[in-house]
Length: 275
Image 1 (spheres, rainbow, N blue to C red):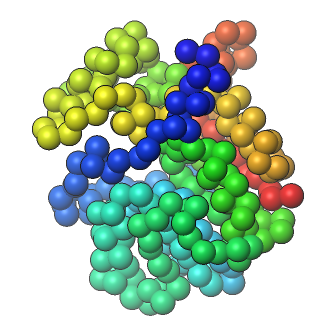
Image 2: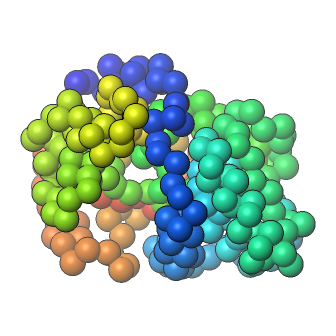
Protein backbone atom coordinates (compact mmCIF):
# COMPACT_ATOMS: atom_id res chain seq x y z
CA UNK A 1 0.00 0.00 0.00
CA UNK A 2 1.49 3.32 -0.96
CA UNK A 3 1.76 6.24 1.43
CA UNK A 4 -0.96 8.30 -0.24
CA UNK A 5 -3.54 5.51 0.03
CA UNK A 6 -2.53 4.73 3.59
CA UNK A 7 -2.73 8.35 4.70
CA UNK A 8 -6.15 8.77 3.08
CA UNK A 9 -7.41 5.62 4.84
CA UNK A 10 -6.21 6.89 8.21
CA UNK A 11 -7.85 10.27 7.73
CA UNK A 12 -11.17 8.75 6.71
CA UNK A 13 -11.31 6.35 9.67
CA UNK A 14 -13.78 7.17 12.46
CA UNK A 15 -12.68 6.07 15.94
CA UNK A 16 -15.02 3.66 17.74
CA UNK A 17 -14.24 3.17 21.42
CA UNK A 18 -16.51 0.12 21.50
CA UNK A 19 -13.71 -1.79 19.75
CA UNK A 20 -11.77 -1.69 23.02
CA UNK A 21 -12.88 -3.91 25.88
CA UNK A 22 -13.74 -2.18 29.16
CA UNK A 23 -11.10 -3.16 31.72
CA UNK A 24 -12.12 -4.13 35.24
CA UNK A 25 -10.93 -2.05 38.19
CA UNK A 26 -8.09 -4.41 39.12
CA UNK A 27 -6.68 -4.33 35.58
CA UNK A 28 -6.97 -0.54 35.46
CA UNK A 29 -5.22 -0.15 38.81
CA UNK A 30 -2.38 -2.50 37.87
CA UNK A 31 -1.87 -0.71 34.56
CA UNK A 32 -1.96 2.70 36.25
CA UNK A 33 0.73 1.68 38.74
CA UNK A 34 2.89 0.36 35.90
CA UNK A 35 2.48 3.65 34.07
CA UNK A 36 3.49 5.67 37.13
CA UNK A 37 6.88 3.93 36.96
CA UNK A 38 6.99 4.05 33.18
CA UNK A 39 6.54 7.83 33.24
CA UNK A 40 10.00 8.18 34.72
CA UNK A 41 11.50 6.17 31.83
CA UNK A 42 9.58 8.36 29.40
CA UNK A 43 11.18 11.52 30.75
CA UNK A 44 14.64 9.98 30.84
CA UNK A 45 14.35 9.07 27.17
CA UNK A 46 13.53 12.71 26.45
CA UNK A 47 16.53 13.98 28.37
CA UNK A 48 14.73 14.69 31.63
CA UNK A 49 11.40 16.07 32.79
CA UNK A 50 10.87 19.71 31.69
CA UNK A 51 10.24 22.43 34.25
CA UNK A 52 6.44 22.49 34.51
CA UNK A 53 6.32 25.01 37.36
CA UNK A 54 3.39 27.37 36.91
CA UNK A 55 2.62 26.12 33.39
CA UNK A 56 -0.51 24.89 31.66
CA UNK A 57 -0.06 21.32 30.39
CA UNK A 58 -2.34 19.33 28.10
CA UNK A 59 -1.95 15.61 27.44
CA UNK A 60 -3.30 13.87 24.34
CA UNK A 61 -4.24 10.26 25.07
CA UNK A 62 -3.96 10.53 28.85
CA UNK A 63 -5.32 7.02 29.42
CA UNK A 64 -5.57 6.30 33.14
CA UNK A 65 -3.96 9.60 34.10
CA UNK A 66 -0.46 8.69 35.28
CA UNK A 67 1.50 11.22 33.20
CA UNK A 68 -0.96 14.03 33.96
CA UNK A 69 -0.58 13.33 37.67
CA UNK A 70 3.19 13.36 37.26
CA UNK A 71 3.00 16.81 35.63
CA UNK A 72 0.74 18.18 38.36
CA UNK A 73 2.98 16.85 41.13
CA UNK A 74 5.90 18.51 39.32
CA UNK A 75 4.32 21.92 39.80
CA UNK A 76 2.11 22.57 36.78
CA UNK A 77 -0.51 25.24 37.41
CA UNK A 78 -3.16 23.42 35.38
CA UNK A 79 -3.14 19.98 33.75
CA UNK A 80 -5.74 18.87 31.20
CA UNK A 81 -5.94 15.23 30.16
CA UNK A 82 -7.85 14.13 27.05
CA UNK A 83 -8.73 10.60 25.98
CA UNK A 84 -11.21 9.03 23.57
CA UNK A 85 -12.06 6.08 25.84
CA UNK A 86 -14.56 7.13 28.47
CA UNK A 87 -13.85 4.35 30.98
CA UNK A 88 -10.23 5.48 31.26
CA UNK A 89 -11.30 9.05 31.97
CA UNK A 90 -13.64 7.79 34.69
CA UNK A 91 -10.79 5.84 36.27
CA UNK A 92 -8.42 8.83 36.09
CA UNK A 93 -10.94 11.04 37.87
CA UNK A 94 -11.43 8.41 40.59
CA UNK A 95 -7.73 7.82 41.19
CA UNK A 96 -7.00 11.53 41.56
CA UNK A 97 -9.86 11.99 44.02
CA UNK A 98 -8.83 8.96 46.08
CA UNK A 99 -5.02 9.15 46.06
CA UNK A 100 -4.05 12.69 45.08
CA UNK A 101 -6.58 15.09 46.64
CA UNK A 102 -3.86 17.73 47.11
CA UNK A 103 -3.57 18.22 43.32
CA UNK A 104 -7.22 17.60 42.43
CA UNK A 105 -7.95 21.30 41.90
CA UNK A 106 -5.14 21.60 39.34
CA UNK A 107 -5.95 18.56 37.21
CA UNK A 108 -8.92 17.76 34.98
CA UNK A 109 -9.79 14.93 32.61
CA UNK A 110 -12.11 15.10 29.61
CA UNK A 111 -13.57 12.47 27.30
CA UNK A 112 -12.83 14.61 24.25
CA UNK A 113 -10.83 14.85 21.04
CA UNK A 114 -8.41 17.78 21.12
CA UNK A 115 -10.35 19.39 18.26
CA UNK A 116 -13.35 19.69 20.60
CA UNK A 117 -11.71 21.51 23.50
CA UNK A 118 -12.14 25.28 23.75
CA UNK A 119 -8.59 26.46 24.40
CA UNK A 120 -6.99 29.10 22.20
CA UNK A 121 -3.30 29.76 22.77
CA UNK A 122 -3.56 28.95 26.49
CA UNK A 123 -1.33 25.86 26.77
CA UNK A 124 2.43 26.02 27.41
CA UNK A 125 3.24 22.37 26.71
CA UNK A 126 1.33 19.54 25.03
CA UNK A 127 2.55 16.09 26.04
CA UNK A 128 1.69 12.68 24.66
CA UNK A 129 2.99 9.24 25.56
CA UNK A 130 2.51 6.14 23.42
CA UNK A 131 -0.39 7.69 21.52
CA UNK A 132 0.82 9.04 18.17
CA UNK A 133 1.06 5.55 16.67
CA UNK A 134 -2.71 5.34 17.24
CA UNK A 135 -3.75 8.73 15.84
CA UNK A 136 -5.50 8.42 12.46
CA UNK A 137 -6.20 12.06 11.59
CA UNK A 138 -2.70 13.25 12.44
CA UNK A 139 -2.80 16.47 10.40
CA UNK A 140 -6.01 17.57 12.11
CA UNK A 141 -4.65 16.73 15.56
CA UNK A 142 -1.42 18.66 14.93
CA UNK A 143 -3.40 21.68 13.75
CA UNK A 144 -5.42 21.50 16.96
CA UNK A 145 -2.20 21.29 18.97
CA UNK A 146 -0.98 24.48 17.32
CA UNK A 147 -4.30 26.13 18.09
CA UNK A 148 -4.14 25.45 21.83
CA UNK A 149 -0.42 26.21 22.24
CA UNK A 150 0.95 29.60 23.18
CA UNK A 151 3.40 31.12 20.69
CA UNK A 152 6.63 29.15 20.99
CA UNK A 153 4.97 26.43 23.06
CA UNK A 154 6.20 22.84 22.98
CA UNK A 155 4.80 19.53 21.83
CA UNK A 156 6.63 16.66 23.57
CA UNK A 157 5.81 13.16 22.38
CA UNK A 158 7.31 9.71 22.67
CA UNK A 159 5.64 6.68 21.15
CA UNK A 160 6.19 3.04 20.33
CA UNK A 161 6.00 0.62 18.67
CA UNK A 162 5.74 1.93 15.11
CA UNK A 163 3.68 -0.43 12.98
CA UNK A 164 6.39 -1.93 10.76
CA UNK A 165 8.76 -2.61 13.66
CA UNK A 166 9.12 -6.13 15.13
CA UNK A 167 6.04 -5.95 17.39
CA UNK A 168 4.27 -3.06 15.70
CA UNK A 169 0.87 -4.71 16.04
CA UNK A 170 1.23 -4.42 19.85
CA UNK A 171 1.35 -8.22 19.94
CA UNK A 172 -2.24 -8.62 18.71
CA UNK A 173 -1.25 -11.49 16.40
CA UNK A 174 -0.67 -13.62 19.52
CA UNK A 175 -2.95 -11.88 22.00
CA UNK A 176 -3.48 -13.99 25.10
CA UNK A 177 -0.47 -16.15 24.28
CA UNK A 178 2.90 -16.19 26.00
CA UNK A 179 5.13 -16.02 22.95
CA UNK A 180 5.05 -13.41 20.22
CA UNK A 181 7.14 -13.49 17.06
CA UNK A 182 8.86 -10.43 15.59
CA UNK A 183 7.28 -9.07 12.39
CA UNK A 184 4.68 -11.86 12.55
CA UNK A 185 1.88 -9.36 11.86
CA UNK A 186 3.49 -8.43 8.54
CA UNK A 187 3.89 -12.09 7.58
CA UNK A 188 0.42 -13.21 8.68
CA UNK A 189 -1.38 -10.22 7.21
CA UNK A 190 -4.01 -7.87 8.59
CA UNK A 191 -6.99 -10.23 8.37
CA UNK A 192 -5.43 -12.90 10.60
CA UNK A 193 -4.26 -10.36 13.18
CA UNK A 194 -7.72 -8.78 13.34
CA UNK A 195 -9.31 -12.24 13.65
CA UNK A 196 -7.02 -13.05 16.59
CA UNK A 197 -8.04 -9.82 18.31
CA UNK A 198 -11.76 -10.53 17.78
CA UNK A 199 -11.44 -14.06 19.17
CA UNK A 200 -9.85 -12.70 22.34
CA UNK A 201 -12.58 -10.06 22.76
CA UNK A 202 -16.01 -11.69 22.43
CA UNK A 203 -18.60 -9.19 21.27
CA UNK A 204 -16.01 -6.99 19.53
CA UNK A 205 -16.17 -7.01 15.73
CA UNK A 206 -13.14 -5.27 14.25
CA UNK A 207 -12.56 -5.30 10.50
CA UNK A 208 -9.18 -3.63 9.99
CA UNK A 209 -5.96 -2.63 11.72
CA UNK A 210 -7.43 0.84 12.01
CA UNK A 211 -10.23 -0.64 14.15
CA UNK A 212 -7.45 -1.91 16.43
CA UNK A 213 -6.16 1.66 16.70
CA UNK A 214 -3.01 1.21 14.60
CA UNK A 215 -2.38 3.92 12.01
CA UNK A 216 0.48 2.16 10.15
CA UNK A 217 2.44 5.40 9.80
CA UNK A 218 6.20 5.33 9.33
CA UNK A 219 8.82 7.67 10.76
CA UNK A 220 8.93 9.73 7.56
CA UNK A 221 5.14 10.12 7.66
CA UNK A 222 5.35 11.60 11.16
CA UNK A 223 8.22 13.91 10.21
CA UNK A 224 6.37 15.14 7.14
CA UNK A 225 3.25 15.79 9.22
CA UNK A 226 5.22 17.76 11.81
CA UNK A 227 6.77 19.89 9.06
CA UNK A 228 3.47 20.41 7.28
CA UNK A 229 1.85 21.63 10.51
CA UNK A 230 4.64 24.17 10.97
CA UNK A 231 6.47 22.67 13.93
CA UNK A 232 10.20 23.04 14.41
CA UNK A 233 12.00 19.90 15.62
CA UNK A 234 13.98 20.76 18.75
CA UNK A 235 15.22 17.20 19.29
CA UNK A 236 14.52 13.69 18.04
CA UNK A 237 15.69 10.32 19.32
CA UNK A 238 14.96 7.18 17.32
CA UNK A 239 15.16 3.80 19.06
CA UNK A 240 15.90 5.16 22.53
CA UNK A 241 17.95 2.59 24.40
CA UNK A 242 17.23 3.61 28.02
CA UNK A 243 15.60 0.59 29.71
CA UNK A 244 14.72 -0.84 26.31
CA UNK A 245 15.06 -4.34 24.89
CA UNK A 246 18.60 -5.74 24.74
CA UNK A 247 18.07 -5.91 20.98
CA UNK A 248 17.69 -2.13 20.66
CA UNK A 249 21.39 -1.50 19.89
CA UNK A 250 21.06 -4.02 17.05
CA UNK A 251 17.95 -2.27 15.74
CA UNK A 252 19.80 1.06 15.85
CA UNK A 253 22.57 -0.45 13.76
CA UNK A 254 20.20 -2.09 11.26
CA UNK A 255 18.24 1.15 11.07
CA UNK A 256 21.13 2.64 9.08
CA UNK A 257 20.96 -0.06 6.40
CA UNK A 258 19.12 1.10 3.27
CA UNK A 259 15.72 -0.54 3.04
CA UNK A 260 15.54 -1.57 6.69
CA UNK A 261 14.62 1.74 8.36
CA UNK A 262 10.86 1.14 8.36
CA UNK A 263 11.25 -2.34 9.86
CA UNK A 264 13.69 -1.35 12.60
CA UNK A 265 12.29 1.99 13.77
CA UNK A 266 10.71 0.92 17.04
CA UNK A 267 10.20 4.23 18.85
CA UNK A 268 10.42 7.99 18.38
CA UNK A 269 10.93 10.62 21.10
CA UNK A 270 10.44 14.09 19.71
CA UNK A 271 10.34 17.64 21.11
CA UNK A 272 8.77 20.19 18.77
CA UNK A 273 8.25 23.93 19.02
CA UNK A 274 5.28 25.86 17.70
CA UNK A 275 6.52 28.51 15.25
